[in-house]
Image 1 (cartoon, rainbow, N blue to C red):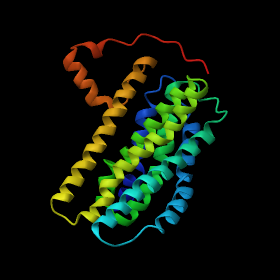
Image 2 (cartoon, rainbow, N blue to C red):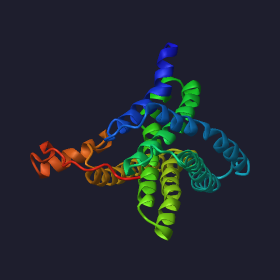
Image 3 (cartoon, one colour):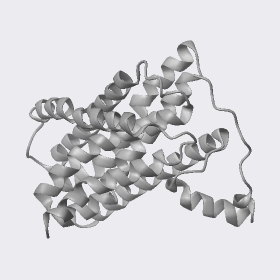
Image 4 (spheres, rainbow, N blue to C red):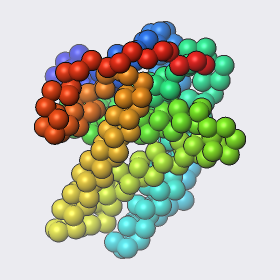
Length: 267
């Protein structure tokens, strides 16, 4: 395999996904501004890696299956999930302050996904460099879309926070970090626990659990995006493809009706 294949697998999945979301905005965000969010997401990998390295040094590296299972749970729910999503959250909030382009609810989703996929791109480069093409193909359909889903949840919460004053808005901002962290941890835990499974039925159960969690997060994001797209009168991203098919079966011809025009939200 040539270098072009490695570069395509390292950078391509994130760029395709961020373009898919960006292209659905009624008034597309400037490419330069979008690139800055991708960059700050990529830079947020550094503090996340430093903190995670220090935290993982405190966890046992071996032992009985129960010890390994507990270490996997601590790693997923107390280290990887909250640290990585926390660094993304801080990067997004730091860049978003006084950003004049962030003037619609859907913009929060676009930029949150961009930060998440900037993070995912750096992470993906490392995995592809070490694991090769097979790892790159696997992550293109799993881990990279997973980061996009976490960013979708974060952006959706922050968009809601902008329309809620006081304590209600503060609660949404807290959930913008907590909810993606829990989904991220739930996604990682079955994979980390495979080491303690020792093969057999436990491994099969963990793999199916991981697939179920990934699918459940996809459904949650699809439902929330459908509501946001309906409110904003914009075409849904490809994430909603299966959801659109289901609704088309229930209401034939409904998808062919054009959306009603809506004025641009005020900042």
